[in-house]
Length: 274
Length: 274
Image 1 (cartoon, chains in turn purple, brown):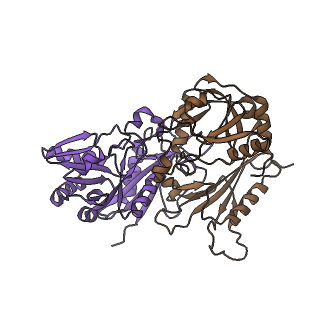
Image 2 (cartoon, each protein chain N blue to C red):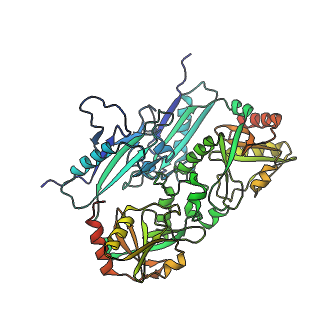
Image 3 (cartoon, rainbow over the protein chains, first blue to last red):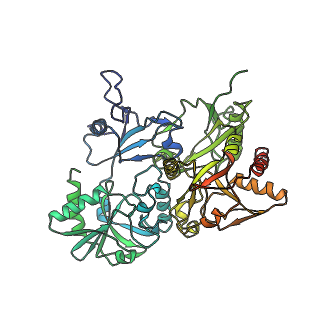
């Protein structure tokens, strides 16, 4: 058995619909050596963090789908893979052609965080909960490459001895983690912060709601103050990377952990096709 | 006479103090071809916008100074050059060695914007004016590579038919432009927004204050509401790129332009050594 590579990289040469192929063998993407794959220093993704991941808008989805499958195939057999799709606005002063790639990497078994849980601290996100509506130019809710704040808050969490962060709006509403959605259980109801608060619509959170609804459980998108979140009977952070991790403490205060429900939800999420 | 290159790039291989030289010829930096200079796709400057420009902290300033001089020398003779120093946190999963480079490019004669002026619209920055003090993890006031918002607001300005933007805090205070400081004249006094509001300490703004004080003019750092800014007798955006540009309209309303004072300040700024 040959060990699968730890990470693969596919550069997407034709990220937009309608770009002409460079001969009959040009499938629009190339599997490249991830240790030596490079991007121009003057790419706007580098100099301005001006790009997005996952949210592909005008992209040629057929080419991206093929690129993702080719990248994943290079890893078989691998139990857990994480893929990240990136599109930048291309070169500074260039013709606007995006730079794009797909990175696939082996992922830790999500069962570990699912079992051990994570400690979380709440940190002010600085924006009001309605900022995406009042000031769309602030790009809240977009997965841009401008992630310095998301990295910075993890350093602040580590400084406080915690694993992860729950962002809170400047007017007191729980929002999301820097790379995860919040899921809360109140009695027999599940809730997640309403998506019009400048947060990301998490695919894993949506899948968790689907699984819960199939079990006949009530779910809702809600405005949740931090105080309300502290009253929850159980809390989780969910994301495509970690799937589902129970929150064991919030700001140093123990949160009840429902191991059986975490396991049920985790199994439903790992087995899904979205 | 050979035309100077439009841009040069110097990669800084030893950006931090104490990094060992790779032989006696290793000066710590290399002049590279800017059209083919690349950075790893997995560099945190690319994937997370996790890096800074200009604010060099732990950097080996001797190496950066030499790199800047070498890069500028490649352009001689050139009347106006703009240099940008960038340091990222290096490769994802790497050993923490920063990636660093200096880009030097020919700049337009700043006299053009100084003469023609710019139209500006005010846009909500989303944060309270005191956010840098209450929530330092939001990195307000740092020149990070996470500039997607600064690029996004210029697109919103263009949509409104304007050249540039004045950020306003969520509680109504004028802050700065996406790449410039605000300078306002009220009668015989000059004011700029106080620097504890999560904004950048502009070197050009500081130089303008120095020049004004040498002329015996009163200057102050102040909390300026947008309403107060609208009452100014003259407004400018100042930055190392454009030096000084008079604001001709703010949100579509004409602003008085003091051409003689703009010229005086512009001459003082172009001739300075900081």
